[in-house]
Length: 68
Image (tube, rainbow, N blue to C red):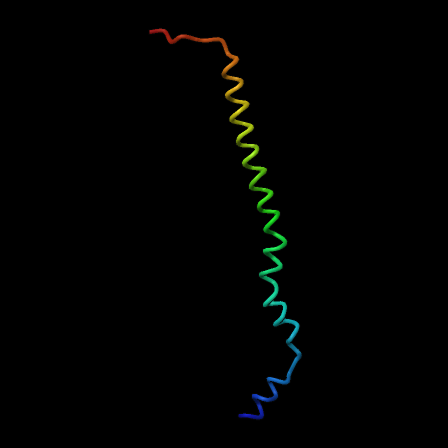
């Protein structure tokens, strides 16, 4: 049993795959994080601009009193 354990410890054939598994989450955060933050700010900007444009449009409409 000890021979098998020593053999597995010395075996480096899957070392690159193990390192990739450990590094991949960090790399994904570093790559996709700024993209998602940029999308958030773009969506926020479009929402605020749309509300502002709607308010400006309604502010320039002539008054229409409700008939009772």
